[in-house]
Structures are given as C-alpha cells and as structure tokens.
Image (cartoon, rainbow, N blue to C red; front, side, top):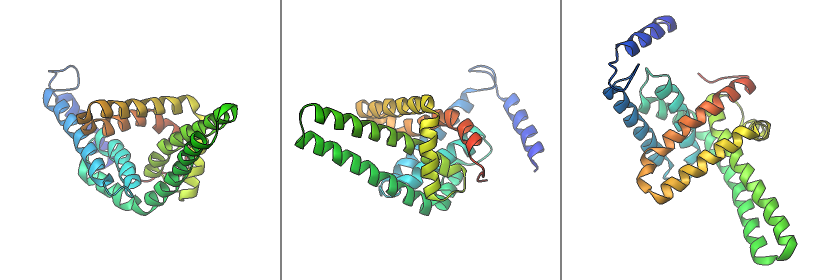
Length: 220
C-alpha cells in the first residue's frame, strides 16, 4: 500500500469511529490509546532496569511514541524494539558520556557543600547547579535527536547543547515537564505506569519542529 492509499484509509478509519467522547473518537479508541501509553511506559521501565540501557530505552520510547502512537498504523512493541535494537550501541555510548558528566557535576556540588563556606560556596553552588540544570536539558534533547537522525554521538551531544540554549524557552518547558513527572511519581508511584510515555508525548510537540528545522538527515 502506497503512502496516499494508507493516508486515505487512515482518514476513513478515523471517520468511522463513533463519537461517545466527541468528534473523531470513541470509548474503545481512547481506551486503546491509554493502554498503548501504559505499554510504552512498561517497555521503557523493563528495558531500563539494567541501567546501562536507559539511553537505548529512552531513545526507543520517543521513537515508539512518534512512529506508532501519534502516527498510528504500527505496532507499539514492534516499533519500540526496532528502535531499541538499531540504536543500542550509539545510545549506550551517548548515555555513558552524559551520565559521566552528570556524575562529575553532582560530585563537585557535594564537594562544595562539604569543603567550602560563605560567598565562595554560594558562587560555586550556583555555577555547578546551573551547569547541572542545563546539562539535564541537553539530555532531554539528546535521545529524541538520536531516535530521529543518523549522527555520530559527538555530533548528537554538540547539537543537543546548541538546541538547549538556542531554544531556551522550550528547554525550560521541557525541564518543567520532567521535574513535574518526577515529583508525581515520587508522591504517587503508580503514575510511573503512564507518565514516561505521556511526558514523551508532550516532548514530541515541542521537539519535533525543532529537530526538523535543525537536523539534515532523518532516520526512516
């Protein structure tokens, strides 16, 4: 089936949905969407358990959200494991590099708190704290960028740093979404079954226009 026929079929299927919950949707449709979100979140959690694979899992989560959940017509599990497999090596290298820098920044914050005092302590707290804050923002850009485009790890990091500061408003929104999700999981653990995928759904609306405008080569 070519792209035109697939899009026509997809539009027809959407029109056929009953309107229990409003135009273009039905109770069954929205229930399936919720279960897809839970499935993606569970896949991300399970594949993140080895810790070293968190990068691959996060890359696959974003890819699965865009490929199977937003665009429809694909299987969540199939798309997630496809992205996990093809990005495993690069994403592991990327995650390792990002994690090392994060660890160093956190270690320096601990040293400042233990060894310094007064104005010099405040200065270094602010310096390392801001560095850690923006480095977290870089990580938010990095794995979606890897899921969408063919680039070496070094270029992914450089691009993510650039995007983090070039689109500072979006970076702050992305950080706010991330910290809100972490807080929600901390205070009500069952939300972890839904929030990883739901947050990536929010990420995609902010990140996709940015990625399309700044990246030259897209993955299929």
